[in-house]
Length: 344
Image (cartoon, rainbow, N blue to C red; front, side, top):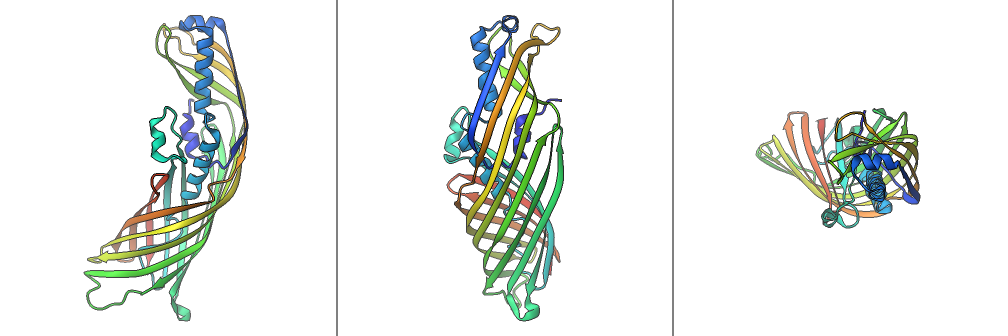
């Protein structure tokens, strides 16, 4: 079964910088002749498409973008910014982050834009310290682990975090809270950890578009060997936020923060496989030759990034449904998430 490499990349939280990358393509002259392409042109196309498919054109920038996305995917999973709990809060949330590299959206004008992505999900719980006379403090914890199987790739996702939220100007019940209530100002910090391990279980089929020749067609690289990734992200967020509740059922929240990002990751690729192409004239597939893709990478995420956040929450008594956006200005990264919580 063909698996687009972007699907694998969307679940791969790389944190590496290229130490070695090499692609070798050996083309069968008969295959080039059947496609109506010059041997050298076909070799160049296949090499370029493999480079793009495995994101080895600007590997250092791409890997850093994916690592930043991994760390960014933790945002909104372990802290409640909208409910102002006075006793407890529990819930589950998910997030999907996209990092656009050091050049941000300006890179979209290039032929091969740098885009890294990462999903995440976690279960959280929080406890307000009013029981010991510290209603200005709420402590949070979150955790999630899951085995993954994505067609040819298997792995394991783990994340956990701890946070402390200090509230200034706790909202008071003054008879108007059903219409409008300001939630005060929250200072939040803590520690967030996530790790992903991925291993190739069987042949990884990668489609490679081809241009020119007698007709448009697509080559297929059936890679067998090593595709191993182990990556971690450690983040210390420092945040200020506030919220406004309107007519009780709607809460708007917003804030800004700075993320101290640490971590490390390793990626090893060593794939050998056959190159084939659909016959544009009909009949059996065309044997184009063989290819070998090698990469060995290790790196760290961007150390510190400022961040803006905003969101909306629907309040159905104790049940809270929310969505949250995070962005690194001016256009470095964005994440969107949401979930359900029960708060009192």
